[in-house]
Length: 68
Image (tube, rainbow, N blue to C red; front, top):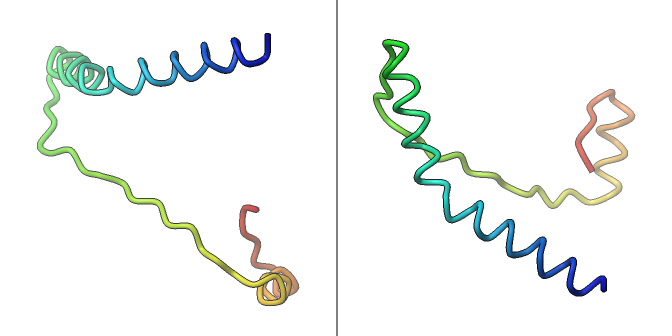
């Protein structure tokens, strides 16, 4: 039962990821109907920081917090 739900979830995520290009086209049509235009699309990159726990606790003691 759990495996079946997992496969359904993975299938839904896969299908929604494949439709991303048409979603961008829909956004462009919507904006053009409002008188706006997209000059260029840009890509966002995400980086994972590997910070040792000791260094992290020193930052937190200074009032700087990071998402875990």
